[in-house]
Length: 197
Image (cartoon, rainbow, N blue to C red; front, side):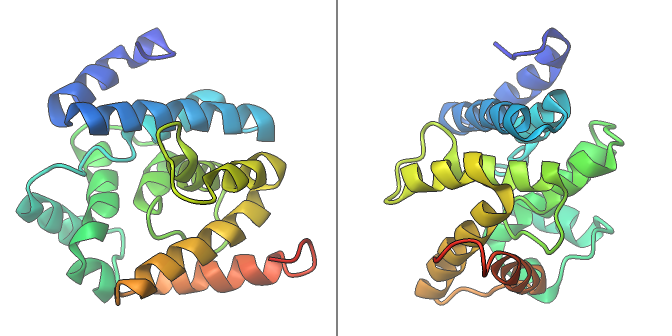
């Protein structure tokens, strides 16, 4: 059951589009975004909704994801356009805006950047990016420490998260979009004097 009764329609929409596992993840991310917003003074409702919808295109047909990414008007770079695993963020932002009629630009942007990140993210954008990484079902090595960072300092958490993500992509010889490079450099520099990584 959605935390907000007026979001029940969105929840039902997700149920129709996602597998049980992906639906559970999406609702877990929504709850994590709510808690992070509460901790860091952000809009809990809007963060919850962005978290709920962040993976709405994750299980759509690849051809549809690619088409929406290319037609989104959200400036995907060549790496995003050529990397199947990155399409769902841009495609999801497009879908939420054009099909679901949600016009909140920050929610759209949070969905668009929840996988690749970018420099100078808003509090909501950081919350959705990080909420996706630490939702209840996540169990990768170091996730408990990552959760500590997220509740301590969002910018420090972004730095640690981006180090982790860049390492994961590079270990698989994957491509990194320009926005990820910019996010990595921005947050690493921002946090260089806060804590040894």
